[in-house]
Amino acid sequence: MPEGRPTIRNHIRRLRFESGELSQEELGKRCGVTRHTIMALEAGKYSPSLLLAFRIARAFGTGVEQVFEYGDIGNPGRPVS
Amino acid sequence: MTDSEKWSVWTLGVIALTTTAYFIFVALRGHGPATISVFALTALVAINKRSFRSVIGPRFDERESEIARKALLTSFRVMWLAVVAGFVITGHIKGWDTTLSLPMWKLAEIFWWLSMLMLAVQAGTTLLLYRRGNNA
Image (cartoon, rainbow over all chains, first blue to last red; front, side):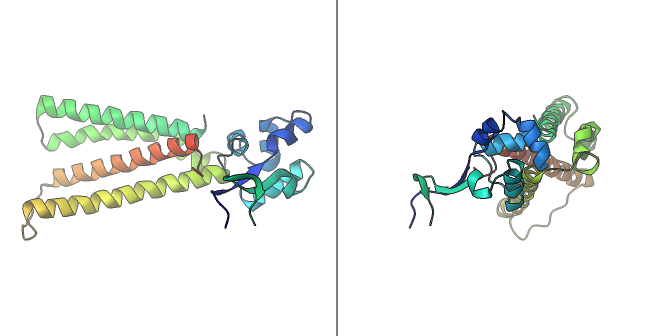
């Protein structure tokens, strides 16, 4: 049984950087959400719906698993089975 | 700051203003039927265009909708608790066989206080969820 609270981590900040410093505003526009929601996602304060997760992945031209990671706070880096 | 946060700050300000005006009015004029006129100040909530943000403004995104829904639910829960607590406490103090005779203006005042409580909880919860994150 996993220890700690399961959480969804993401690599949005890194992917924005790799996409030529794509702004939060622009990413929000592409995904149909506000800049505040992108900020909350990057800060780990919000876990997106499946639909939004796919939209974000599509905005970066990559797969959902390259953007989001289902992990365990107690064991960072270890995916929850 | 999002429109919902601005609405929350405005609403809390209106509630603080109304509460202050209420106590000043009671101190100067006494507690009577005219007291409920002070609650007209809560109409200031409606002059803020953000009060209609979900109707005439841009569509909420999924996080904003979730926060708005949670804040509204919390306000209803608190109102329900306040109503139950009000009945239980009154019953224990006055006795469960007591017949209450209440002037209409006092009933209206109770309604106004409940409305203000709901608005305050809704606004406070909205601010809290935006700051702490709605997964907190």
